Length: 396
Ligand code: DCT
Ligand code: MG
Image (cartoon, rainbow, N blue to C red):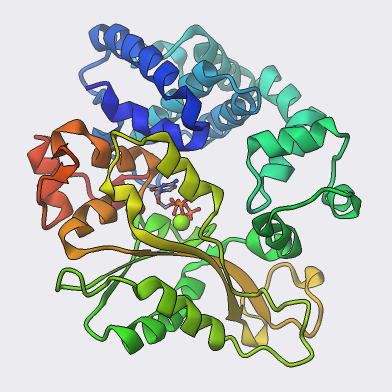
C-alpha cells in the first residue's frame, strides 16, 4: 500500500532515489498507520483537497522548506514537509493550535515546530532565513527557467552565477530548451489564464480535426481541477476508434508550426513554436520507473511552446516587459496522444495533481504491463476499492 504515496515523488526527485524513498516511506507508513487520526485518510489520493486552502500561510512556509530540502537533495526532509503540507491543504478548517494536530499522520518534530512558530509569531525564523539566503534565491530563479532542473541550477550557482543577466552573458552551452527558456523567460513565468487556454484550445482543435475529424480533445492539468491559471496548458487527444490516433502528434505539430505566421523580418522569434519532446519532464517519468510503469508514461506526446496572439494587449500585466511590437505571448502547451483504451488512466494522470497521478501506477491496476480496462476515472477508483475523488478535489 505504501506504493500509493511513493510514485508521486519520483518525478520531482529524480530516478536514482526511488528505492531510498520507497524504503523510508514504507517505514513512515508503518509508523503513521498506528497514530493517524480517523478523520484524515492516510492515503493522499483519498483526501478531498479543493482549491480552498484554509492553511495557506502554513503550506506556503512548508513549501519553501520543501524546496530548500530539494535544493540540498535531502529526500527525507522534502518528503516530510510535502506530506504535511498536502494534508494541511485538505483540512476544511484553519489550524489554530498545534495541540489540535495530535494524531496528524506523519507530523514530525520539525514540522510541528515550524507550524507552532507561525501560529504564535506569524513567521518562522527558519523560513525567513531560507528565503533570504542567496542559495535559495538563486536556485529558485534558475529552476524557474524552462529546461533547468535542480542539478543544473546548482552547478551554475557554484560557478558564481546569480542572475539571468549573468547566465545570458556567460559562456554556458545551453540546451535547446534552456535557450528557449531564457529567451521567453518573462512570458513563460507569467501565469497562463483560462481565457488563454481556451484560445490555445481552438488552435489545437483546428490542427487536430484537420487530420482526425472524430478526435476528442480534453483540457487536463490544473485547469481541469478548477484552477484559474497555470504554468502551462495540458491537452489529451484521443479517438473513439483505437489506433486512429497513431502518428497524430507529428502532423499536428507541423501544421501548428506552419500556421504561426511569422513576419519575414522576424528572425529572432523563429522558434516561437518548437517541439521539445526531449524535455526533462518526459525523461524523468520514463527513466525512473522502467519496470513498474507503465504504458501510461509512454504515450506519444509533445511539449511545445506556442505563440499566442494577444491583440489589444490582453492580459494587462507586465506591460513594461514587452517590446511594443510584440503582440503575442509564448505559452507552454503539452499535447498527449492517447489510445482510447488507456484514456481513463491518462486523464487521471494528466489531471494531476501529482498526488493523484500516483493511482495510475498502483500495482493492482496492471499485471505484466496489461492494464485493467477502465472506461472512466470512476472505474479506476472502484477497482482499487477507493472512494471516487472528483477532479476539483485533487488539489493536494
Ligand atoms: N505529470 C506527469 N508526469 C510529469 C509531470 C506531470 O504525468 N513528469 C502529470 C501530473 C500533473 C499533470 O501531468 C499536469 O502537469 P503540470 O502541468 O506540471 O501540473 P499542473 O497541475 O497542470 O500545474 P499548472 O497548473 O501550473 O500547469
Ligand atoms: Mg499544467
